[in-house]
Length: 171
Image 1 (spheres, helix red, strand yellow):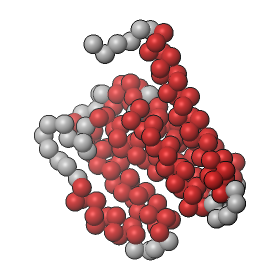
Image 2 (cartoon, one colour):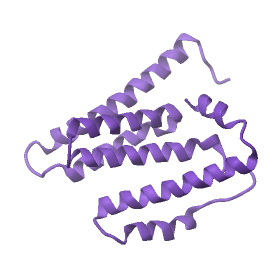
Image 3 (cartoon, one colour):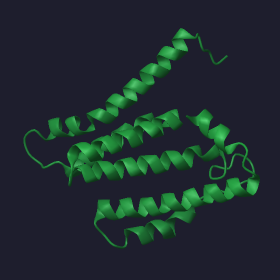
Image 4 (cartoon, helix red, strand yellow):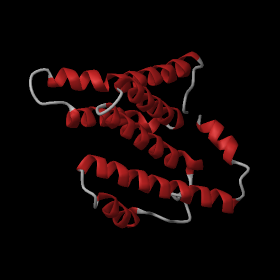
């Protein structure tokens, strides 16, 4: 999928590309604020996110993490946040529908960049926050986060199989 994104955005002029990245960064900040409000149940959480975020921005001429990577980081974070929001919603409303949306969002994230494999652990933490305490709590957490671990392992397995079959080396 990253090759497809590269092909789509390759022909943008520099100004359009940078405006697109800035729009996605702002959208990610708004999503992060919404996610923070859902997690903390505080109305001030989005404001804290918007005020603190610029402290962590790194703008530089060489290997700029915000304006580089052909939208990979911005889209990866956006799909991850949407996936977590849908997963949290699955505990409140239609379990199957929102879980499918969450898994699809995480699958899109994995298809963009392989660095997001460990993010499957986020869903176990979110499930821990939403599962009732008591006997069977661990099994419920595993049950709820298993689709995300499964999709990560499946994607990793396909990647390894392709590399073995085609004798891919990094030398």
